[in-house]
Length: 528
Image (tube, rainbow, N blue to C red):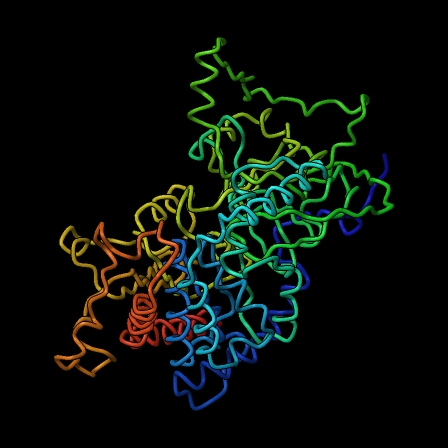
């Protein structure tokens, strides 16, 4: 074996941001600085060190989140706050919105009414044609082709084809890497799509790893290992062997890649203590990592027999897993990995108690919707390297589970406390901040509620008797037309949900501006 620089590898090792994202951040600053000066009515331009990093965080919820994300972004656009954002993150239904928007390289610089009208057609059209005989034959052909290419298929592959047809009436050829066009000048916030990697025979509570997708890279927050977006799905062994073209347009499922070959010889590197991951040459001469005196050998015991096997499969098998070649194949966890602070903050699985399990990387990744664990796309925004100061938290679920997770992992996040009475009657917006915890972002939390919108059609503008019906938006009851299983809305219901989410943003502009003011002051104080 020979020494090789990490730059020579097709897997980027390290927790720092990639060069392309750093370049984007420099370009985005001019948009953010100008927008902040405008919305905060500042007399002087902000200096580089005074510009906070603002992120828009969305959560999943099918067609409901697809619709509300448009309304919320419309509200932020009208407040000129959209240009203050550096990142926008999403999972599940919100990624349908994001992938539609990022087809337009200048979407955030334009009026969103046309985009919202196009989305209305998707939300209100009849979906039954998805199950016609002709369409089912097409789905079957696509799945068979995927199998012939050597990939495992599951229900999620079929679901992806159905969503593709629901949103686009046919095949959509947009690639995630194509979205670089929409951020190459810093003209839009950088999109971050979130998924979770799971392992066969283990529940999500026992094993899960956050995976982020950007137009530049796909990677594990936990390991600090990333590959170029266009290479995701390739077969790797210490270096890429097969290169795949990323064909996704909706990132709540993982689509089929097309294959091509690249003539590259695998590279071998020796152990380097600066990385938490090391390439293992895979030769007989290379011994398994030695155990230390304080380490205890562990074993996984599985009761034998058809009943226990069937029960285990019923409890742990998932229909919604998309499987792809593991780009960490051939890598071995460094013996000092637990000493790496950045690794440790994402060390959140039972298997981490057994280093011998971690060093046996699976051949395939099992990618699932992050909503199967926590309905949040926040973790990539909480990476120390991104230094996010303000999170506009557009959420359709309680914060309790996410806050407990961040506390357990010692990830800086403001404390959230709501009384029982407040939980029963949520307000439209909450501002959470924790000045005593270094690195903790300011969180502006927007739950999905219908409060003053029932009586006001716009902030400060009351409804007359004939307009009261427009304020009746049921987003909480069991009979709500906006439950997460509903895939088709009426035109009226679509407009009401867009209007409600827009109104909740506009009606709480003062809290958003307060958070931005505080963030700027914090940045100034940090410099002193």
